Length: 336
Image 1 (cartoon, helix red, strand yellow):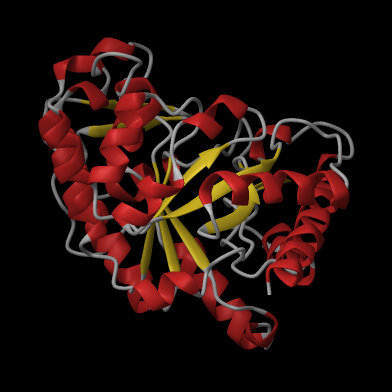
Image 2: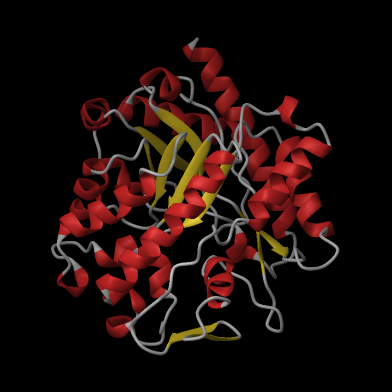
């Protein structure tokens, strides 16, 4: 695994979402364009696109997994983007859920002979804590994420999704856990969770990933986020640094070496339409190298789905990604 991780130094990837309307259940023109654009912009490890739903046809990182799960769970009630659970039990389906977009991405790449332009592919799975937070989301303190049995069951269910993504040949599989920055606060764990429970739940999913595993956590990296992720078996820890520069103080090069982990370094903003220049991005990546060594993956802070509806957002997104790819290539040449 160490050799495999070494091959990822200074490669480029994206987080997944784009500011385009989801048409996966329709003609898939937007999905097809998104896949093609991610390949053509030069990303080494593009992620299958997660596009944004509409008011009448909602889709987000929660619904992608909970909607198919509700087919086997009548107690999981979904109305629009509101998700509630009647009772405290979720039944586990026999098959993987939420991986239809990933399967289509793989077949599209193969059908259109796009794999030769890539070093590999990346997939994302909404993590059990974040997925649980969508259930009863109106009340933070009583939402699904506050119930350890719900989180543990979702962890087991999502493990099947991770295993299926591994079988599909995705080189990097990311567990997306933005809600961990809420649970793992500045000084204590929300819901009085035991840190060992968080670690073991994440390791349940990681154990099902036969290729390279990653965990993406947005926002500020608190000491609890840091210690928790370093204690897991994950290969890559993934954070925002462009919009949250304080995160540059969260880890050291020694942390990464001792835990044998890479750092996926968010070097361009995913909430600002301003297109960072190649020179500016290269300077940010060089600084990351000074802080953390060569164990860096170059990526945006987060997904770009939040920019949907803003004029010019799609074009700006790919201008930003193109400059990021050029900057990473420049820094790789310097390091060789």
